[in-house]
Amino acid sequence: MSDVTRILKEARDQGRLTALDFAQGIFDNFIELHGDRNFRDDGAVIGGIGRLNGQAVTVVGIQKGKNLQDNLSRNFGQPHPEGYRKALRLMKQAEKFGRPVVTFINTAGAYPGVGAEERGQGEAIARNLMEMSDLKVPIIAIIIGEGGSGGALALAVADKVWMLENTIYSILSPEGFATILWKDGSRAEEAAELMKITSSELLNMGIIDKIIPERGYFTSEILEAVKTAIVDELKELSQLSTEDLLEARYQRFRKY
Image (cartoon, rainbow, N blue to C red; front, side, top):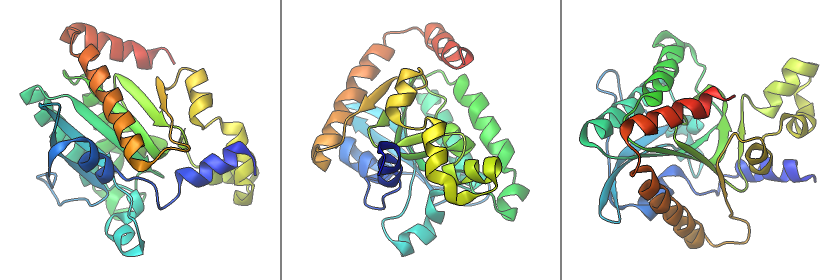
């Protein structure tokens, strides 16, 4: 098994830490908030407010289930437009109260169903990209499993984008890539090698800013490493003026 295939398998593993695990394990007194104030609550997107070293932080994440029943209620971590609108509502609330935003991303992509399209899936994702690019508080995005397509990018327009070691971040799944390129989805492993989707390859290309090691570490150690990294980074980002913060974020994404 090649390295890329192993990482792909680990990124999709059902036993991985979820967004809720990170939210509850890193932030004190995490309170989950629900609904987009428009249509309904989307179980695939979690969000709320917690404290980090005494500072209030808004946390948003895409949540996969731990078992089949959980996955059915979470739609296998594929958000509907109301999920992205809930995320945006919480981020705009964070901006209003001056709270930094931390997002945890683990999705194969946004849900492509008929209902989702009727309610404006593309618009919801595009609006998140636009609003996040101009959000006047620090944003840190962390890929904690799969970072698939626009569904992941809708929460990843951030000042800093990090990945856990055994995660992937790509414009579409290797299966989709193989189907489009070779009309053969079974060549997904071959596609994964070509796509440069692993954390080390993306760091080399400057797409992400940091890799958080996880191989050989206990769950508690991974949570502690992520917590320490967030605390240190927020300390640095909070020293920037709003203008400098937004300009740096704009240039970060324009350079591609």
